[in-house]
Image 1 (cartoon, rainbow, N blue to C red):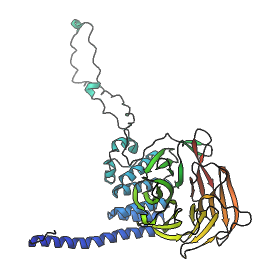
Image 2: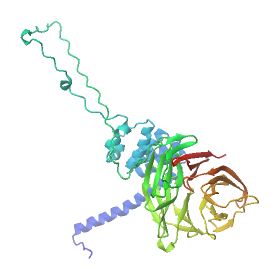
Image 3: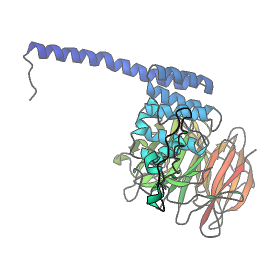
Image 4: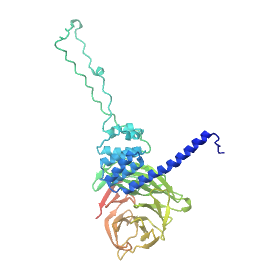
Length: 483
């Protein structure tokens, strides 16, 4: 039963509280909207940095974070100033683990910040692992306290004949005694690295550093069934899924470290980076339930920002691909023969189009409204605005069947086409101006043995793929520039 206010003072306090809530909520909403507008408007790194500094000055730390991220993504790769700015924004906006990862990247580059003294990094210093990472982040190994002069002074040897000892006269007042040199404490080496397990949501390195092999970075991939691949050019990292262990793995391009980025409860089926927003989109399928989920993760730390599971009434469904356009996220449901759309800032899934064919494997958006779909016998061109689709005519000698991965690139489609068992080929499908006919199929690489059928990524004008080596189960990251 609701309580009845009879005391006039209580009624007054509640009225004042209600008035404050009514006035504060629109103000907070206005601040959030203003920050989002600023992120959309800044198109150059310098402008974003200036807006980020202004947001920090007025203590709008969420806008500070978004603008700092945009500045780093628009600027030159591995810019220490931009990375340091983002680390401050991550800490101040309540993302200390993200800041810790960024500071570790800076430390590996030989760049050390004021993380040990600045108020900006107070939340980083409050992390349980701070004591372990402080020497690395500051570049100043912690040493034991120097020994006191009394303890360091060597004892004087006893005289051989105590009876023969005589007292020396006191030093003359005209010639002051020369003081003894203070003892020098011996340097103490830094303590060995501890093997304590870091917190569960911090990166864990289960494998030794990878080795640079001829043609690419090499790492031990025994037992890894790779799903998808994404390349983060800003941080220089490769991200892919492990179907067997239901987790995401990250491989540092420069450090060569293979680590767990995050765990996903269901089977990872595809992933894609949104370079504009700094997010990682992952789709997964729940075994035995015919349901799928789309996850939005923070790119650097792997922290889950949101997860949306397709409602049971839309089953059966199996999300098998996810792609990012400038305005939205597009998801392929192979089992339900549908294309879904997900807003980047929302928590909904909307049916964009129903497919008239079975066996759809992968999608490749050419724009926000046009998507190419590969199915077992060929290609479709789907217009999401008019909700119409047409078969892409293969031409006289073009074979476009058996495509398992595909992305759009400058009026063409770069794809992985399965051939003989265990081998595939990397091809470029050249389309006519309408996108409804194949002009030619260029073979870029023959006999590609992938660590997973979809472990391929297109970043800018470079194709990266995980190639399974023939010896000891190693995996090599290959790259092929496109012209």
